[in-house]
Length: 118
Image (cartoon, rainbow, N blue to C red; front, side):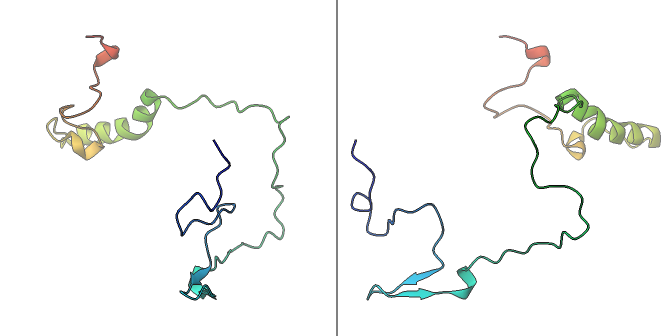
């Protein structure tokens, strides 16, 4: 295939490095900058900040294990369920309260216990 140039694209295509325009082109091909389209970078003051902006590749790998679905459930949902059981307000029919779904109907991939192969 030939190189992708502005001649191959539509009339509004300008080959560049992906920067968004900061204004509009008029019908007479004159560029009018629009102040609202110019990005404004808000940078906090880093005085007295000890960390550097670069992390070396020689840095040792983290010691924390990757998050699994079981760990996520135990940290987020299980305490809520335990609290509701202790208070006596747990309802097995109202699992949406904890972010769980009642059924798997209409899902592209149905979840089965222990990845049951059908």
